[in-house]
Each structure stands twice: as structure tokens, then as C-alpha cells.
Image (tube, rainbow, N blue to C red; front, side):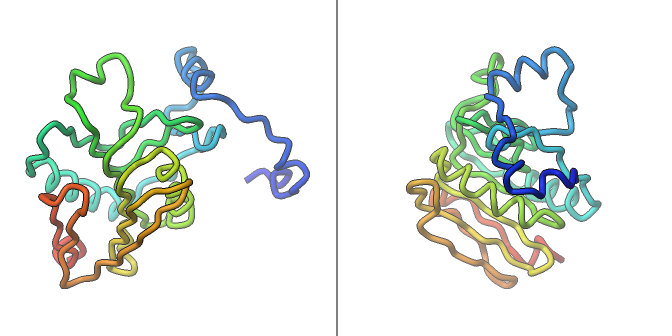
Length: 187
């Protein structure tokens, strides 16, 4: 990290960019593909560990096999929000693949982030998703063997958090057909 960013007076002066500017820079090849826009700042994505890849692939396959009428399950693809364009590990969005031919979804019904070594930044993303009205956010924490389910977004925060542990089944309150055996996921 640039040590200058550790100075609060400098950090307050960092210039933010818009989603539109981020897209323009990307189109000109000025932005590394391994980045995402969070709160107007271009952030380099973390390297994915084998465990992260395994868990994301496992969850994605499980969710793709479920029927969510009128919804699409996406993996590691952008979601365009007011001042951010995160690429959640998994997002369930309203619509079909054809709806996103010319633009990324502008929201999601449910977002899943797997936090092997990124818990701090993935917790920070909760406020971004809540502000965007994402009805449900799952934070998968393999080291703790839990899935935290955040719901009821209001004023940039989730009003309710439920922790689902090994031996329990995570059930989505928003998409009740979505059910994940937590113990089976981590074994």
C-alpha cells in the first residue's frame, strides 16, 4: 500500500471517479482488469486462493441448479451501482442473460461474497450493497465455518443479521428456494 494513503489528511483529498469515468477508462485500456470500483476508488482485487475458487465454484453450481423464476445467477461479474461497480463472487439478479447484452445489472436480489482472506473488505462492501437496495447479502466465512446472512437494507445498513453454522441449512428469506447445507459446503 502507498504509505501516503495512511495519512488521514491525504486520504480525505483522494479524488474519486464516477462509474461513467471508470467505464470510459476501461474502454481505453487504462484500467487493469483485476480491479473493481468501490466508492469511487479503483481497487485491485485480491488473488484468489484455491479454497476461495473451490467454494465459489461449489456455490455457483448449487445455485445454478436451482430454479429462480425470472432471475439469473452470475459469477464474478460486475454489478453497476451509484458510486461502485463491484464484481461479487455470486449475484442473483432479476432478468435474463439477454437483458444484460448492453449493460451490467444495476442491482441484485442477492449477493454472495466468499471471504477466505478478504473478510474486512467484504464486510465493508455490505454498506455498498445495502445502499443499492440489495435485499440479501451472504458473507461466507470458511475459517469460522459459517455463513452470515444480512437482510432488510435501510439507509446503507442491513437491519438483520443471521449466522448459519455447520449442521444447519442456510435458507434465503428473499428466495426461499435457495437452500445451502453449510456443513456440506465446508467439508
